[in-house]
Amino acid sequence: MEDSAGEQYCAKSGPSRDQVRLMLIACEKPVMIQELMAVMRLKNRSKFREKYVTPLLEEDILAMTIPEKPTNSRQHYCLTEKGRRLLADIRQIS
Image 1: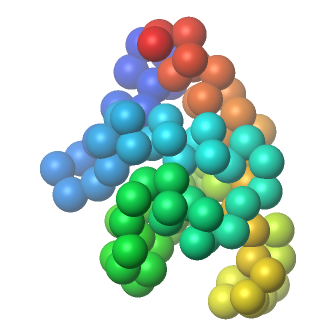
Image 2: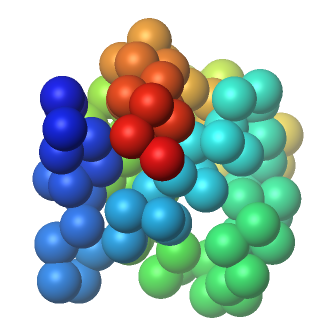
């Protein structure tokens, strides 16, 4: 995560470094998926979840506020400690 902060999430089909940065900034406080989609200016929820949310959850960068009920209408996403460190690294580089 040193000088390549965010680079591992910039695969051809994955989010760009700027998109990762936007997601992390948006998730500094708990946020609903609709709000994340608005920040990213995207409308297709299933593709958004597949391309952006799921990879960050799997990498333990984002966490669900109600993990036992992933499809709960009150579900929010927030940064994990790893996500906060990644955001700090990205901010230092920018």
